[in-house]
Image (cartoon, rainbow, N blue to C red; front, side, top):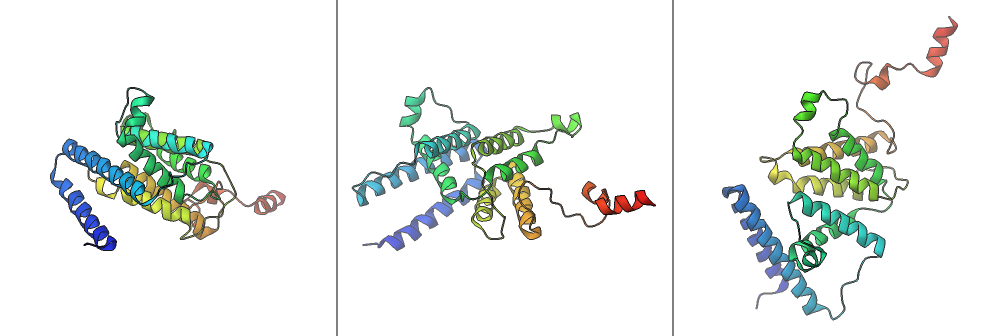
Length: 242
């Protein structure tokens, strides 16, 4: 009989082979296969949970459950999933799959991180009001969805003091989220690029010791950034006295 470790390795190899084969399918067909895989994985997880535990899975607190469902709804909307009503959604294995993904996000996102500030900085980098109208018209649906999701998550976040550090839980989570979109870069690089920019920004905060919410840049000399063109208060006063 195959032991559990061997079985897990076999499943992982099979999953990897299936996902690699999706590259040879047309986009609609590949999406359909991904949905089938998600349904299967959800069913397997549920069956395993029933088999090895007589206790029901613990439910998150009401406020956390609401946040989980909002994140799940945003993910479902991005994938184009719409249900007739809440009852139909509650019976859907795909909805439970989106909830599982949202649970995974909440599980690795540390409560001490100022998530609202980080997420809004990311949204601001995508949604630029100072761009020419021609550039704004070129904004695709993926970018608009990315901005909407980031701002929605920021609105739900509870700000708390946090100093970014290389290798902390939030950096790890950002990197994982970015890497999840690596395979889709050929079709739509918007979300990957947005998360990559956010990861670089977070690392810059960490490397410079700049708190979240404060201006940070890689400028070194005047002309690199407007912040370097403003004279220090003392220097301005000295000049005025002369």
